Image 1: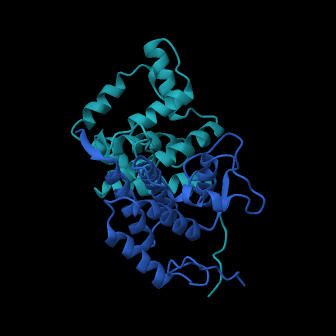
Image 2: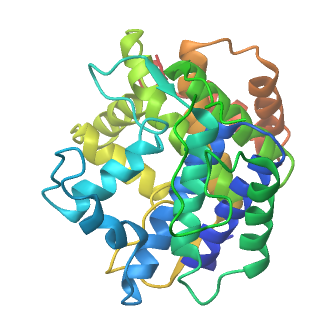
Image 3: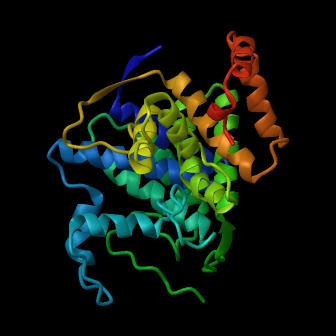
Length: 160
Length: 164
């Protein structure tokens, strides 16, 4: 039966599932897809409410890094999604390789964090969900590779 | 510590399978229909090209062929694929544009079943239709109140309207 659903709830449900699957050690491909889909809604809602999305907030900073210039905010947003393989896991174009090479956990953490950045900008967000993921990160990820304390001045130590 | 995760190589068929399999598991467990729709939709997005590369008829092309028989013209494939994604709720689960309202009307449970059906039809063309998760979903579908009627009505579908 057709029912009315808030777009925020559709995103919240998918993000909650993504985080649940991630911390349970389930398939991280699905985590990326679900967090990416949730983020597609959350970033749209963020814009609708007159706020700056996560990718918009880093657009200027990302310009001319390693000589890469983005022609538009949309092109930059797509490049950020490609970092986390969001599109590779839901599209397959003619002529494209049949294989994807990725660091699965890194991409999954990145996809969730990107969605959470937009999630927390919306008033309806669940603080407990965000806190639960941050605690998991703090307890399980290598602080030399991941910014587990959300420190704005943190820099990764180059891998050995 | 400070050992970066190794790069993995994963095939597109594996990506499609793992997402579809999890969609079926979540669906049969009665959990998040929204997640089912997104995972089955992502799987479908990959399966189209896999089925085409196997020189078989993808679900979208089949739907276009049926539209041609019924309406006398073949809709553009990309346009029809987008329409199908809209109907299955896939678009509403991954996009939100400035012209959208805060609320959307959807029958989530039905759309979740339909999204899996569309993906699983393509999956069986490039993989083993006897896999347990595929069989589990087919069993569930047949056990629905309209299952027997659906099977019966399929018998009267003319050959030219059947999937190839």
